[in-house]
Image 1 (cartoon, helix red, strand yellow):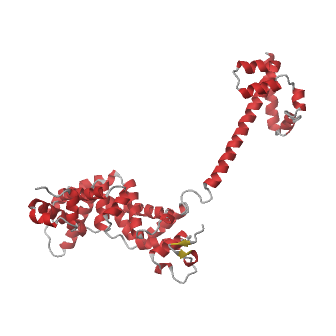
Image 2 (spheres, one colour):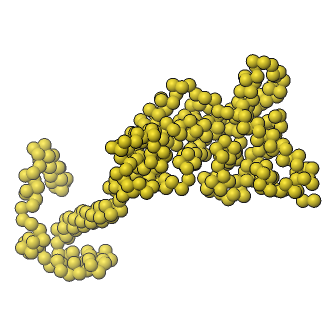
Length: 186
Length: 204
């Protein structure tokens, strides 16, 4: 005779079915009685009631925790949706791109000033990309006056930047320039 | 936050200006009011269900301090997720579900260790004679042993047993909470009872 499986014993325990089998099978009936005895024991075991003072205190704790927590809309503020995040992310990418490009341009200007007319050769040596080749073709023969006239370099920008420095910053800049000149002489 | 209706009630019907005090509202109306931003409505939900949620947690950890922390956490999570409550099940069932998940995620091994130690005292209980006024005390002592034995069960067996035995949740509801099948729930329930039979004996 096959006996009841755990699933079937639980069904039998809850009075669902298998009564015919239980009427004939002593072993399954005994197992079911044991399970029923345990279940009856469990149902007698209530949870100790806390002090009556505990419940108002508990409600107050929940309320305080809710105050500290985010609003019910969720952990993200309701205004922070993808419709907002997407443009913000795109704007951040553009700003980063512009900053990176300005930094590169500044470095390129310093390098080109040092390399003067050797710029196309230097760019060729650095295995340039297509855009750098085009750029090098365009500006390779260009001197500072031509670049200024073309509007690539605004006149007086460096002077204005220096004038915007504080007295301490100007002193520090002076010190750095003197140190650099001393180093170059030596 | 805008809601044209909650549980079919126009939002204007669930505001504080209505004549019905929150304490007299049913759970569905309280949820609707709380979702509409009425914190006092959620306070009533807490007041109405705190004992049952606390008991779920207590049966998991078998001590008051952890149970109160877990119950508090369950209500905070319920507040956060209240707009997701669609009213398909009773609010109490939904709260039990949250409480069980909080317990499953946070139950420490400390409770299990304590439980194992306490189980060893079962034999002492067998020798106690039940006499008159001692009867209630003995019964409470037995209840403590049973609670300790439950707290020592593996987590899924414990969750299944608690939800089925003490909160009358169906096998399907338990399966939904635990993310398992009805068959697995029945198997867990069977093994929980079988383990308790071993640890407690079959003493009625």
